[in-house]
Length: 476
Image (cartoon, rainbow, N blue to C red; front, side, top):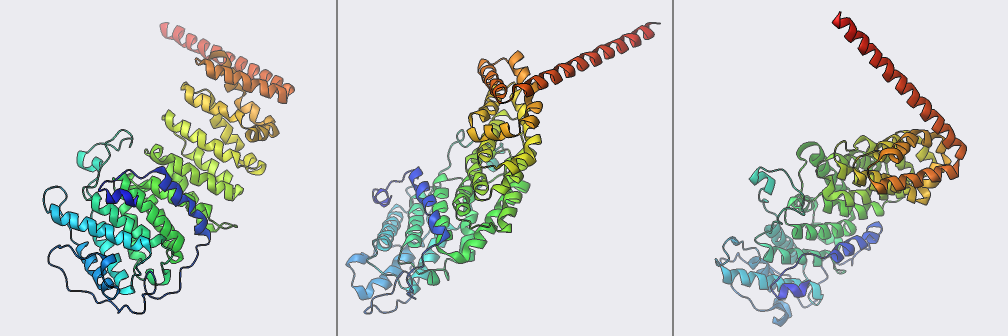
């Protein structure tokens, strides 16, 4: 990544960066403490004097390289370079201040190299100025979102044009500098938490609403590492993410970074200890499950589904609450959303035990029966795929006397009249499975269905006769 900066280019963060962030979830459970040094990233060498904050610079000018400067002057030179990086420029005009922009970019690259190499140690006074410089660059008012400026509804991110932050050529390197400092094994969290404090973390979370996906990727990596390394910030981060979700669900229904925040949560949930705290269960019930009801759920459903399944995997007793929550927010007219819900429901059922399954199986299979008869073939097909899972089939077989009467009519209706051949074939296979499980029960259901249909015909005939009598009476 750092080599790309030196070439002057940038690239879209790869999926490997996501996996590297998620892989640190193991560190979340038990992050290792840093060195006990009391001076920034590491203890300065004994021959280095304590640096003094230089007077403010009035203009940008190139400075000597850190690597070639005397050790005694290196910390003061580091401070002056930080001052250069605090200058702000107008990136809407590429030709304006081009020389100064390039000097700042090269200075930022040098600072990243200085932190990453580990050859130079940063004193605590320099650390405060470095975090201040990071804040000056990244903490800003975000431009209006595309739907706010155009007045249009939020569209699928695959269909809309990606927004690019004009100052990204500098911002990317600033984020890289912050990330390298946070992940450094030399970072002393006892000192660093004085500067990377609650206010800093809250401002980072506000930036997740940026429309530039590259910035959100960096924010995700930085916040994830902060959560893993700074235990003091963990309750604040969880609570703040909850508040962002509440505002998104119940007020705005618009936020660009829900998917990235859910990715961070996926790793956090994976590190929860058992027995699970009550606050985590409340977060599942009040924030994660209601996230299913928004119009934009398709944009972040994969990450949301992962978090939900992680909860059930941690504590199987939560399966009943999760399934009932999905049924509560089940889409009525959006077939693509129904397909997503069915896929998530199958994953949850894979982690569900018999006792929890029995508590919710009646409303669950009433919903599945309606999905089986859906005219949208993908919905019906996805519902029939439940019978491909050995675990789900075993749960159904154990409770077949309750389940089969609920879905039998839907199966028969598909066999007789569904327009899609794939759905018809899958339905026939499901019926055969029930015949092999309990042929007697299938016969009983067949008789009950015949009686029900006969009664329905009788009621229809009586209704028709009543209407005929009314018509005859009206003619007289």
